[in-house]
Amino acid sequence: MSTLRSKQRKPTHPGAILREDVLPSLGISQTELADRLGVSRRTVSQVLHEHRPLTPDIGIRLAHFLGTTPESWLNMQQALDVWMLERKNARIYEQIEKVV
Image 1 (cartoon, rainbow, N blue to C red):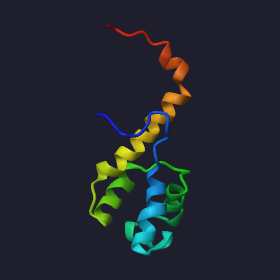
Image 2: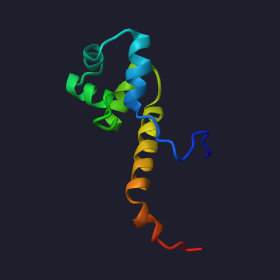
Image 3: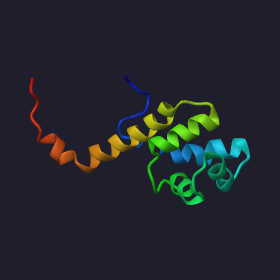
Image 4: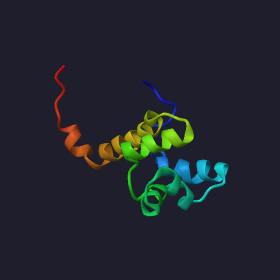
C-alpha cells in the first residue's frame, strides 16, 4: 500500500491526533476522556503527550467512544513503531541479505 507521506517524515503519534484534533472538537478534557474510556487519567495523559504507545485496548476503547475502528488507531501507532525501529536498527537491517 502506498502512502502520500514521505518515508523521511516521522508519522504522527495517535496521541497527537487526540490532543490536537479530537479533544478540542469534542470540547472535553483529558479527565473526561479517561472517565469515558474507563482508564486512568495518567494513561490518557501519557498517550496524549506521546510518552506511551497507543495499545490495542485503548484503540478499541477509542473506536467504541468515537465511532471509528480500532484499526484506524492501531495503524497510526504501527506506522510510527515501524518508522522508529527502521531508524534505530538501520545498520542491523542493512546487513540482512536478500533471498532473491
